[in-house]
Every structure is written in structure tokens, then in C-alpha cells.
Length: 250
Figure 1 (cartoon, helix red, strand yellow):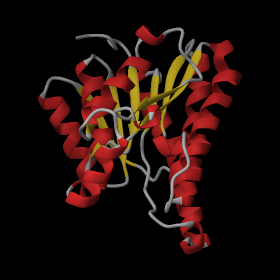
Figure 2 (figure 1 turned 45 degrees about the vertical axis):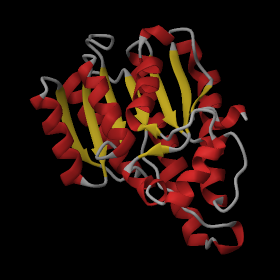
Figure 3 (figure 1 turned 180 degrees about the vertical axis):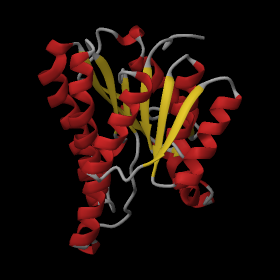
């Protein structure tokens, strides 16, 4: 499978969950993948697994809210592989707290990791993509970025911001053959969601919201990312792609 043969991809938050599956799939499809995560030990282990599977991977510790570290990641990627063809802004955090229960410090942390990171990633990758004739940027949002939800005001606001920032970038940089799209996972089984998925009452509520009678897998989100990263999506930009089992269809 070589849908991304000759391409270089950066995947943030690649130490676990959806980011891990995205990085492994892009590598299996021929991409050289730079994996980043705040958890250096975890992301280096994932990169080692990819290399054992025959792929090309390099891992870096990365605070995605740091402009300095974004500059380092893109510079190191260009040094090693010459260009950046694909950026997957996957890193993010959840904050299950309502508006009145959210402190300013919590709000700022969610916005820094979920939104500022996406802004910085695009800010530092786009010039490289322009220089090299184009690229694909996939920003991981959430169904919370498409519909309102209770009990997670800062998270919902951050994911809505990712959606609209993606559209703005798609309009601004389409002339340079840069495609920018957002992916909106629903109820996906990951380490971050395990406390909810493993709770029978919460799981039953999840299933009551979906059209398909199950929770999604991280690998299913990865396949949507692969599609948008590949030339199969060469005329697709500025869209939001739900991977949600039909939550937003109800």
C-alpha cells in the first residue's frame, strides 16, 4: 500500500489513541512520519514499532502550545526529509466542566492545547508547503465542534474554533494547492475516553446517541485521515468530515 509514497507527514499527539493509529497507517501507506507528543517515552515507542513494521518514523517530544517547539519540529522535519506534505494536528485534551465550573486557567489551557496548537502548526508548516507546491492539513476536531453539548463549554468552544480555523486556512491557501480539512470524531474508544466507554451507564448513553450500535475505533478515524491526506481527496478542502457513527445525523 503506497498511497503516500514519497510524502512526509507530521502527526501530533502520536503517543497513543487516534494519533498513534494515524501515524502507523500513514507510515504503512509509504509516508515518512514525524511523530510528536508531550510524552516522549510513549511517542518514541510508537516510532520504534513503526520502524519494526518496515516504516520510516522519527519521534520528538513536543509541547504543541509552544511556538518555539513548533519551529523546531518543522525545521527538523525539513532537515531530515526535505519537506512537509501532510500535517495532522491531532493533539488535544478534554475538559468535562460546564461554563460556570471552568476557571480561567482551565479555559486558557484548553484553548492553548486544542486551538493555539493548530494555529501554530499551520503557521509553521504552510510556508514549507507553499515552497514545495502544496500539501494537505488535517485538523482533528470533534462532533462537539459541530453541535452544542452540555458540560464541556471550553472543549466545545475549542473544537468549534478548530473547525472554522480550518475553513479560513482552506480559503486562504487553496491558491497554493494546500488543502485544509477537519475531522470530527464521535464516541471513539481511546485511552482518553476509556473512563467513559468502560462505564456501563455512560456506554449505554453513547449508544443511544449513535445510528450505528457501537463505539468507534481509533483506526476508523485514521482511515478518514489517510483519505484526506492522499490524492484521493485532491479536490476536497474546507470540509468537516464526521466519523461519528451517525451522531450528527440524528
